[in-house]
Length: 475
Image (cartoon, rainbow, N blue to C red; front, side, top):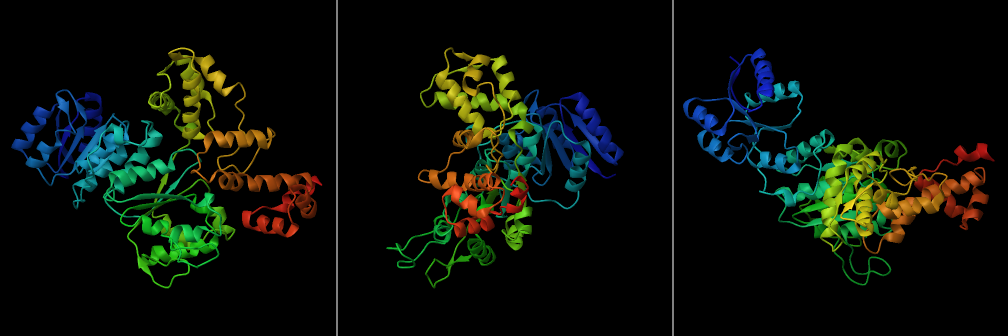
């Protein structure tokens, strides 16, 4: 016999399929449908693993796991849930669940997890108690379930996480969730956008500087690493970090120590690193613009966020959440009609969740009735839903830079005081490519068109990875 399994599931169809799959692997499965029956069986028999649904006929299967732990403190528990939210995943982790499976689940994966659970015991991963109001991520789509599961797996350790995804998908929200729900929640959470800081200042921003280290350094300044000591440092758009800063970051990750710019003393820091990028780092590594050894240091646990167009079933929940959020700022409290929701679900959402939020806010502001209809959506979106820029702002279509900039301003929210630098970082490359296209790749003429020095243009072409030969055929 492979092991004794207690299956607590009130959906008979699911229970039948799961029991049959486990019995085919040699497990002895005892099935019940209520908390009361579960407790009775635990009082009489010993089980190697328990599989339990969350919502049962006589109560909350998760909320009652404290009683299970009293009877069988070392028994692995696998949670099966149709309540597919981050809150449910975290509650499962909070109760030291061995594994969490959102429904519908992959039966083969479930069987493998059961086999692992009856082998050498894995440590549980308890986390802070939390409620729905603390959950920064919204969505029950299958695309988000893998994200939730990965988040719960890194809460009790300090492994470095790399969050990838298009602009506006919520990468910082993932970082905040890991911080807020993990062991470092009592420490500071410090975020820095690598793309928004001028290259000559980023080392000072990250590591601090001593008085007199450079012109304008009139006093000692503490960098982001020291500010985040004991907590989490979120490095957004890490792919835009200049080479010199990459080298210092790698050294810090290896040694756990920093040195302020212009300083001699090495300072120990205790910081968890969560990095994020909306760019594919592979081509940057191949082009020599991102260190391969740094990539392997930050990509210990990858979490890939799906674009909104791949989780359209979440658009309704997100839109209603943003309507309630808007009402909390003084805007009218509105609901969303079915025709309006259908229209929102067909949009391409190049700006992803951030764009949806901004659109919903404008709809609430302009709403004529308590219920927003399809016309209310059209009043905000217009009839032209052509993509005006790629996810990273590197290409503008025939709609022109004015349209691309308007879209970028709608979907991006750079920190206060960084709007100019952020806009320049987003549009400098497509602007240079546009000038090269207009001049057939002639750099001298492109420099004149842009109104900059030819040497400056050459330097930016190299730094931004622009390929002038691509435009020679248009001359």
